[in-house]
Image 1 (tube, one colour):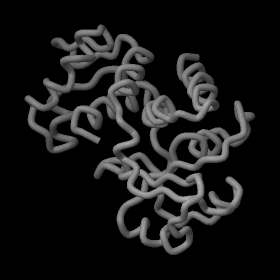
Image 2 (cartoon, one colour):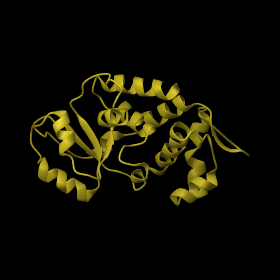
Image 3 (cartoon, helix red, strand yellow):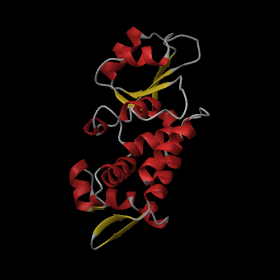
Image 4 (cartoon, one colour):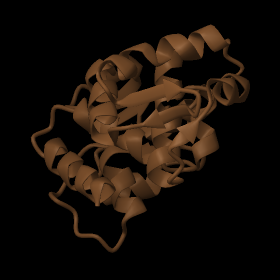
Amino acid sequence: MIKKEIIWRELLFQAIEKKKFNNTQKDLAKKFGFSLSTVFSALKIPRQVGAVNVGGKGIQIRDIEKFIVLWATMRNLSKEVIYKTNTGLDTLQTEKSMPNNIIWTAYSAFRLKYPKKPLPASYDKIYVYANKTIIKQIQKRFPKNKKEPNLFILKPDPYLKNYGKIAPLPQILADLWNIKDWYASDFYKILLEKIKN
């Protein structure tokens, strides 16, 4: 992920999951070790489309949905796929066979985050973030083959692990938006509705 996406994710995470709608450019720069000009630049497009206000009171998110859609449409998930294969197992068996220290996203993240909520559709693909060490474990368990992939390993940014074993909600939404499966939109819509309510 590029720096502006890291900043956008943090602002959306704070608003959605922490109910904190005010942040400062200085705090964001300090948190990620970015320059103030990087943070300022990252806010240019969200300001232009009316997703955020930036002023004396800091950064105020005006429209969460618009901000998520902005990030989702600019995101390029396919560029972050660093390994894919067919596990030869069904979805739940594959999920149970995954090593520790991965970060779940997309359908699996939805299921794990809301275990009591019915799934909008059954899914047969798994998306996770994993570093190079963990990828080696995954490659041993699930070698590459010529079948249609059902496991996709994504490259994590250095800050993603700070959000826990499941990707933060705005990232799950941005990832779902970028997945071509017909049922991805069902997951996206239900998750977005949950956030709006």
